[in-house]
Length: 118
Image (cartoon, rainbow, N blue to C red; front, side, top):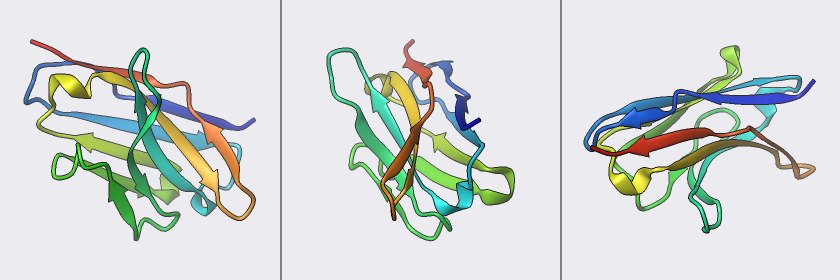
């Protein structure tokens, strides 16, 4: 059974940190590009950060550059998103997406809520 399971969300004060995890099972994870996306009510889902299958290439949305770091551990089938210096505008549901670029196959996780508030 294919699964992507996010965890690590929660309530944090402005300036705080969280680390999100995305654990994959049921497919060959190390062949997939992975992205972290976020969505707030009434808005489209946006790409926050992406990482290549071997971890050698990373990209970030301008709004999170210098604050967020995406990494992966293929031995653990896991991608992480370290989020520092959090702002209220980072509040959203964060989703993990795995993409097999040769075929376009996509898997999504169920999301984890991040709330930045004092």
